Amino acid sequence: MAPGEVGRGARTKFAIACALLIIASLTARAAHAQFGVPWRHTPTIIIISAAGDPRLSLVDEAVSFWNKTLEEVGSGFRLGPVGRVVQPIPEEALQSLSRAIVGRPGPTEIPEALRNLPGDLTILLADSDFVSFAGPFHAPGKRVVGIKNPSWPPLNLPNVARNVLIHELGHAIGLGHNSDPAMLMCGRPASCRPAAFRSDVPRIFPLTDGEKAQLLRMYPADWKPRSAIGSGHAAA
Ligand SMILES: [Zn+2]
Image (cartoon, protein in one colour):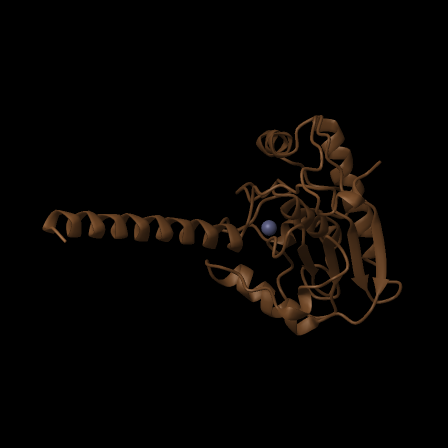
């Protein structure tokens, strides 16, 4: 082998290593927060909770809010039908995933107990205390939203649980955070926290014009289910 060939080989290996590093870092970022990644099919939504959980009607309100917003911005995308399942909540798995999402950058490992839930988008109304979250896509067309016990602050403050649910569903359809505490999607790294949603009058915090434009970019007017996965759930 000539010296020149060794050099070329080394350069090629270096180039491949760089490419892999870039892919790894992009994947890590995507898996951490995974904002801006749209659904490719109409997601069925399953709520897992205790019987008669007072948050059930808030989830219905949240889904209606997003479908009305999508309609108003001219999008062809809608969240699918909402089903309800009463079964035990894997509390420790939710706490662990919440810590992973909130606490550190990097790939997020989805606990086994949360991998095979019945919905495309499964919303778990939990009984324990953690930072409510929307998880990344962990399998084709599968996401998890975890909502903490509403009797813990700040969810026990008037109007907060309503907006936290809508905020997390906003993440679940691809929106990220802004830094304006008067807005629905304000969040880390800005200092606003859910207590800012407190209001004696029920009200849903607004979206920015940029977020509405982003919704329409992710889900345009002619949006159609693009993969076989879940296409059976597509709205007629
Ligand atoms: Zn958030």
